[in-house]
Length: 165
Image (cartoon, rainbow, N blue to C red; front, top):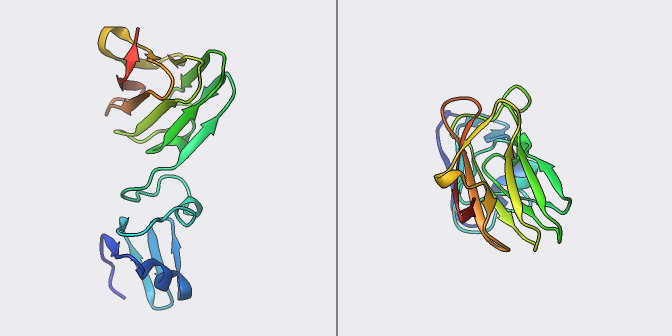
């Protein structure tokens, strides 16, 4: 089998693929060899299957949601490229950890959703810089979204979306 990138599956082909072979960590591993590179699903839903692939697998059109109901949460590597939904009646603090703690890849994007009445405040850990218009660091209200994007410089993030100071 020849290595190719990307592997593109049309609707229905994923089921045929998984019947006799395994899709693991962004690579198709079959009895005849390995096809590595970006895996792209087109057509039907890939949920359930994609969640078993592990962290950091680029799957076009799919982004997992991490649901949190406490009043504090620190971003984890598994949040990369996905959504974090924070829901509580009380105020919530989302902490962006330093690169020495969590090694996010450059250009990582994480969508943050305020799912409850408690306002979400995005707070940098020591050594982390969060750049935003007017130094806004709070999500504007229930059901609003913000996006954190890591720059090419470690510990420097941009925050944008429906945010307020």
